[in-house]
Image (tube, rainbow, N blue to C red; front, side, top):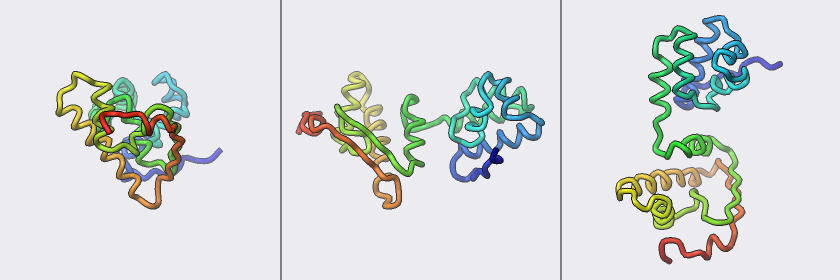
Length: 175
């Protein structure tokens, strides 16, 4: 079985938190499997937390602080790393998108977010949240447009989109 991979804590706040989790777990003399039992998750899930591929949830952070004797380190840092420009249901996807080398998307109904224009994005956001204040819609559109900068990097990610012609012809928010 391969040993643990070296982490680059500078790559993201989540990777830094994962590296600290590994350090605290090893210092406490616990295996990933044993720590997983205490968190009611698998050892491989703990490995994903340590690798920065999964986000530590607030209830897990509380248990980690108790079990590993780290005061409130994981709770404080969990709150900081959970802050995102994106809605909670999409934050992990946006983070994964930012580090992806390839994105494949099938879009039968709407133009995917990475390919939307500001006007299209505003119409979609307004359709999903018709009573939201203007500032909320502007913030969502701004975050979505920020994501499109991924496509200006010639090295990654490679984007494959299968787009239904109806998504292009459907009038969304005006011509």
